[in-house]
Length: 102
Image (cartoon, rainbow, N blue to C red):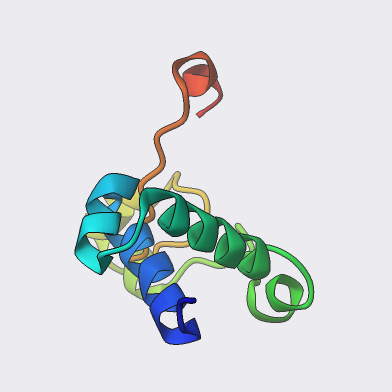
């Protein structure tokens, strides 16, 4: 049994660090299968109803933050950027045959 707090810690730590299941298992002193099971469980919870539609809102592409739009230095680099620039990043490593799509 793993407490809800530890399940959330496993999910967040994995998302932020992008470490392998083996490293996460060592950090939390849990089996790799246990780490994978709880990560997938929370990923499913956060990506489905009712959580996702209630808390996740995609930005509109025509709404540019004033700090970026009004600063010529930022605008030079971000004028053609699509999506949110909010300092969040989750590392993703798609398999080789999907690289062209990303």
